[in-house]
Image (tube, rainbow, N blue to C red; front, side, top):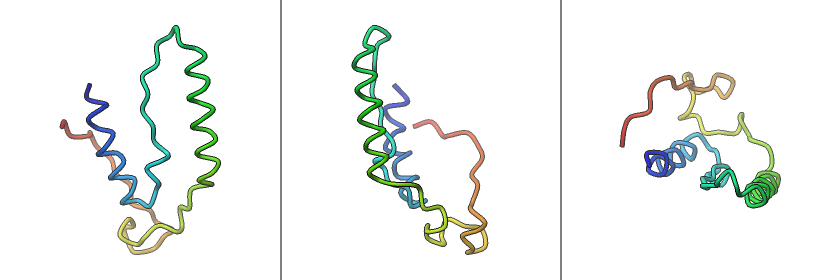
Length: 82
């Protein structure tokens, strides 16, 4: 269940980049739960629509290399085990 433990870390990282944590959702759905899967996708789609588009240029300067919103910081690497 590493994924379940990593979601709070991911949400914290997204917040640092100025991205709402409501854009991430973890649900466990069986292959036999097609109706439930469809409902979850519909709910998430509506939630993201209400949040609106990402504001890449509106993030704070701590997430950029040079303090310029035109040059976002890129993180590359393996996620640490929790």
